Structures are given as structure tokens and as C-alpha cells.
Length: 96
Image (cartoon, rainbow, N blue to C red):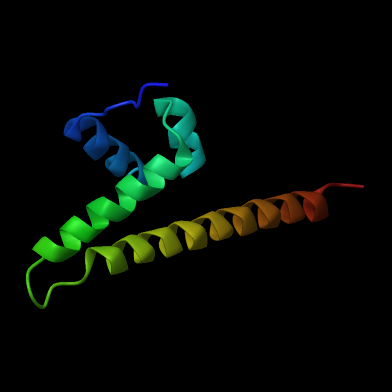
């Protein structure tokens, strides 16, 4: 079986999907038809490159990526809580 080669631009777009757009590795893997393990390694390699090229004193790209992921989780949790509260208010405000 021949090993698939990908362009640097393709890898860059995959990285943007994962970090900036917040697409999960599983979803990106299905959309791009690339194995999940390959996407994980591209993401790590790109973060390492950014880390090496980041200015001294600036926040680490790895730390920023982790913070973005944490904020996305918190936002999703808050959205779920809002939906639960909306349903609860609707339930208690119904005329019986």
C-alpha cells in the first residue's frame, strides 16, 4: 500500500480546523479522509513549531490551545445549562 503524501497547505488547513474552528479530530478525520493518528501528530508538530518560533515573554501556543479547548468546554456546558433552565421555566409556567 502506497503511503499518502499531503501538502503543507493541506496540513495547515487541517490544523486550523482543529485549533481555530474547534472541529474534533474524529470529525476532521472523516471530513478530510485522514487517519486520526496523523491529525494528532500534525497538530502536535505544528504546535511545537509555533512554540519554537514564539517571541520570548509571549503566552505559549500550547497554553493558548489548551485554554481555547477549556473555554469551548465551559461554553458548551453553559449552553446545556441554559437549555435545561429554559425547559424548566417552560414546564413551571404552563397553565394546568
